[in-house]
Image (tube, rainbow, N blue to C red; front, side, top):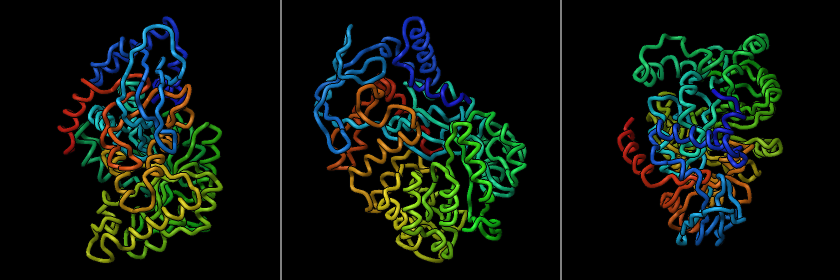
Length: 471
């Protein structure tokens, strides 16, 4: 896996500064990558083109305004460049920044990366964050992502958990047999340790394993807090999954800070939420209430106004993952979509109430909420489900998806806005999504870093995605 600076360069962060021979080699490399990943319709000529976009209505954070922008070396500018400029008539379409996916594990290996990339591009999702992956497999797909003709993705690699903690059983007992062995062949039990999870029980463990943790050059780190006690005592065993001892998290955060890495925390209960915020993590991978294993968990997942206030004061981002619970029926089946085991509430019962109430508290306190589905094919499913909770108006939801989420995934890049020097990436929608949110599905044009992603590319994408949806 490349380091964060390299991956951002691959994504085009320095594309605007390339000149002469260096620029020629960069363009050639991108074309070779495009050909390797099934995007052979993109040529050197297209990558070098300068565009002027006319007759479009551009989202300014509040509404849509007519404007004219140029794309020069992958960046937006209002200054007309020298040399040939191709005019793109947007015919009154509504322009929004591309969407993000702040939590998903589907960008994972060479066996499915092309179909996953094409599916994301189809839905207008250009930026994806994978907060737990198989390091070895992620390192095999660096050529297929983080280039103008593909999605951009970041990886945490192996999450840090306690002995017997989540996600050990998920990888060793479920995914190993049902997901990975059919793709890559037999894998012995235990193969995933230090590849998809790292077990840390003491400060000495952390000291000994830290060089290995950072050796894979993750883009950020993931820690697991699962049913931790509020005072930082031992996690409780029994019917619940486990995670890290919460007292270890501040030390992990401190080491990550020194290494220039942000930290995302998996949480399930209000106690987990509090421990993670106190430890100084940057992001919470879930809203408590996303997964309830029984009726007794409902109150344990409820946040307070104080929880929300402290999270806002500490500038902790929270990923919504409101659809994630429906993919976890083996863990109690007591989640927000009513696929319950016959005990407790149906679709509008405790789980749905807890999740909705927690989201309302967080939004009211000013916590930054970002869009992530965890298990859906793309974040489109998550954002459409959030609409059913009736918590966010269309403008708020749009801004979460196209502004806050991309910025959370790539905080050092100029994305998520239309401004001078920002990346020339946008989606052109048939209608105004503030008036009719369904227009987010009516994508008529896609540009990424000054490269058009429609035509032959999207025809191939549609064909491939249609053939892969059942997997």
